[in-house]
Image (cartoon, rainbow, N blue to C red):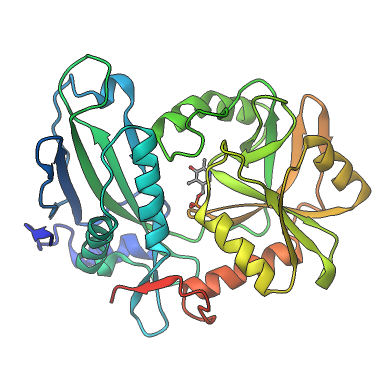
Length: 361
Ligand SMILES: *Cc1c(COP(=O)(O)O)cnc(C)c1O
């Protein structure tokens, strides 16, 4: 099934686009096009169409507005040294999108169709991909329930859409993120939707994020729902802890227990850290391990990871139990090394031994 190209005009002037790409921020500007594909229970997926980026019209009784049946993905395209463009692990996003769809009772989009839409949009809007290290085109696939009706059941219609926004380099080496460990709110419980990338998880997290801000923290850290002691995630990112230092350091991340979102960056760092010669562990990490580890100096670095920011150092952790500081508030050497290695692979300056990069142009 190929994509129907209904628009190849560029609404934004060349000068305007160049100014936006030179200073992209994040999620501020959107490229000239989007992809839309409709699914119905009777006919399955209709042909996907690439059209001019524009507002959409939906019936007010479309199910997504009432029961929140929605999923999304986040992935990036990077400029390469030869001026070309490559995507980072797009098949992993396709696979996760399919798993999220199953959990939220939305239709599964075949991997080939998902990839085709992403490649088509990046190709069409290639001149929106910024070029500096750390910059990228952030790609947002999403899908929502469009059946009209207020009955509660899986929708028999769905709409898939794909949009893209140029993304600047987030990383501010002077500033480690400060976190508020929430003992009041829960992100995910066993049997819930923690493993699915769905908007509902974020809707439920906003009040905790606001509580974190009130405590003077940048982000919220989630602990498990049952025992209220195991570290799970930070906001919309996974977490890593470095035990020890130098060549004998161990790089650890909370184990996927069914309530964590399985990050593609998290998974990639397991390989990158092992390639760099570190011992790597997926394990249970408690808030006591965190406090005792940073107090004794056993835990030397903490960082969060995800597609948007890639790697962000974590400094102070605050909670009702007190405040614990990691290191001196600046990114540690292993955090920096992992970040630079991953970015090097993404930008094509470090050898892609895992065959993660998929060339678009
Ligand atoms: C998307 C997401 C992540 C990070 O996943 P990546 O694939 O690395 O971008 C982590 N936690 C949550 C809750 C997320 O939604």
